[in-house]
Length: 370
Image (cartoon, rainbow, N blue to C red; front, side, top):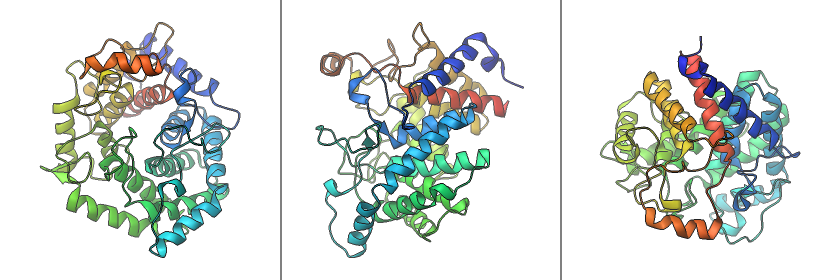
């Protein structure tokens, strides 16, 4: 039985609208644009898209998720020679130039974006895609055969690059190795191993290496760190708890990480900031992160707190039920920085397909766990 929250007309309407936004704006290629109305986000990210596909897979649009996963597989296999060169160079101990590595975003047709003056090397999206693909295949009893080569290439790529510093989820701080990135890589590799889809034999040993590094350098005061050696937390670390379970979601590290995020980044009425010191569009609260926090709350039995986050997301939809990247009118950490971002790139990106996806995932999780 659904919870009262998800039975309410407002939530039912927003859930329908969210799925409509996702499927309507999906490109013919299968790619999801991050935001169809925001020129800076006219590309498709593996990370955003993987969560969007997970929402579609859960919400009755399996064909949409299929199309995205096929697009990802084509993107990977089209770069097979490039990936094999990266793997060979790493095995030979040769340095890897950032320009030689895979980008984080692609055009909707699957091409490299070229030199757009934007930071490009980050690996979390590839791990997130492996996780989302394995979830989708498991949920719908899908045939993994068409994906085996793309999985093999992606696993090999991540085994060769997982320990390189790169940009984080927010495309910042490329000199560091980030807790959430390591969690996404571990989550994807572990999911492929558990599904029996690892044809390389690299998933298990790479997961072991990631776990050892996190134990050695990725903790501070018992909680996961924003990056290795940092005392800070970042709300993207929530994904290490749920869904990736890179640490025991009910264990002491997860408990300490959640407590630190709640203390530093959660507003009393709901809504989550990315990290202390964030200045992007004033450092507001992100529906994506409220959905991620609510998802973890639902998984550990804090259902009322999960519903609070679902309600908070819905309360920041526009009049036509579109969800933004950051909640308008919410608390800002650095309000003095808002005007310069608005002058540079215009109003807050709306609709953000990833926001709609996290709303759908949380609504589905509450229905399942009620």
